[in-house]
Amino acid sequence: MARALHVRLDEASAAALLVMRADGLTDSEAVRAALQEAAARRRLRSSIAAEAAALAADEGDREEMRIVREQMAELAPDLPA
Image (cartoon, rainbow, N blue to C red; front, side, top):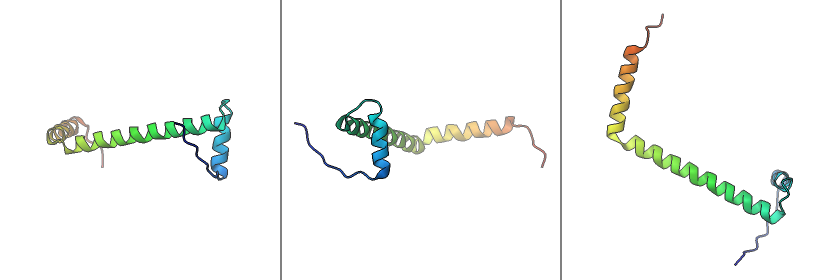
């Protein structure tokens, strides 16, 4: 069942709605699309943060990164001071 929602838009939100409406969307379609897009961005950010946390907690991966850093430092030319 569809749920009705009433909102008051500030100037920035009203301008954003006009951008969405320029694509030929109704107010309802524009708001639904904006909510879905915002939720997708938040889910993506959450999954990236979870992946970063898992990598940071992976001792094997951290050790491998340390070894690679040391190897890269050995290959790097000495820069004048």
